[in-house]
Image 1 (cartoon, rainbow, N blue to C red):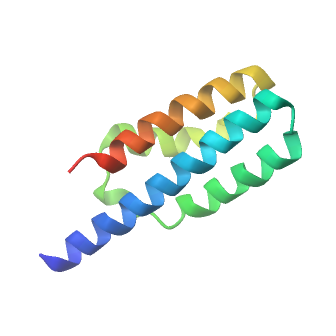
Image 2 (image 1 turned 90 degrees about the vertical axis):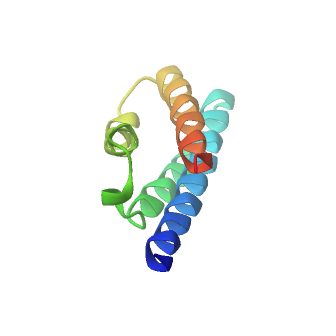
Image 3 (image 1 turned 30 degrees about the vertical axis):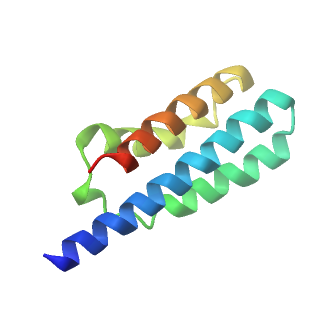
Length: 96
């Protein structure tokens, strides 16, 4: 069905965008640029609302849900987790 393929493409684009934003969050937290990191985190959260979560695997839904808790951790942990989530979401976006 072409419509389900279109939604999957939108989901993949949004997941890739979130992954890139989270990578930028990790890099900026690591370098101490907290305000820049927070802007990229806000962008990732906005993108999350674009995703049709019914079409996602459960582990991807869980990652997207856990993003809310990410920002309330210690700076080092935020950078680590943001990078980990970035890799996982990028991998999910690349799966056919």
